Structure formats: C-alpha cells, structure tokens
Image (cartoon, rainbow, N blue to C red; front, side, top):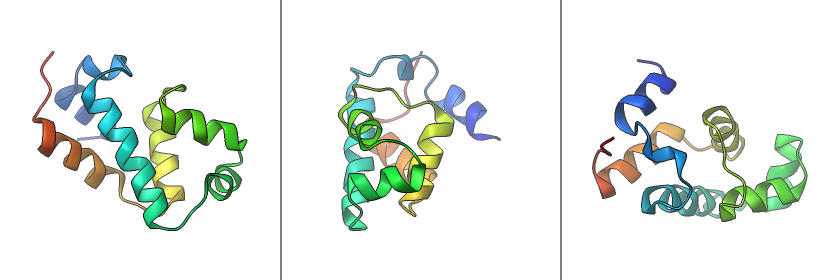
Length: 97
C-alpha cells in the first residue's frame, strides 16, 4: 500500500485540520527528530532549498505540510517518516473519519 492510500486508510479526514492533537504531536516529533540529529532550521532549509521561515512555519503549524513535503522534510533530516507516523498512531490510536 502506498503512503497516500495508507494515510487515507489510517487518518482519513483528520489530517485536514492542523489543530488536532495528532497533527500537533506529528509536528513535535518532527522537530524533536531534527534536533536529535543536531540539524538547525537553517541547515534543514538549505537541504530542502527553502527559506528558513518555511521550516519554522512548518514546525510551528503555521504552514501545513502535504505528504510529499513531509517525506522530503523527514528524509532531509535522515529520519524514517513511517516510523514517526507509527509513533503518533501508537500514542493516539487509529483515527476514525
């Protein structure tokens, strides 16, 4: 199953809102993964070829990341995107539509 289908199956409509506890947990884990690797927002922005404000806004929930952007973000910090998603799901359980 591809990532898109997996997300729709696991988290059907809940990802539309950046104000859910699940989305906030996702952002917190993304930031923690970046910091664990010792990567600054500036360095991540350079790797993504984006301005530093892009990283800041994404991590703070001011800018919603789509699935492709999430994958790029996680790969740029050399972290496993599926593991992060599984961690959030483990904590909050499968989301229901």
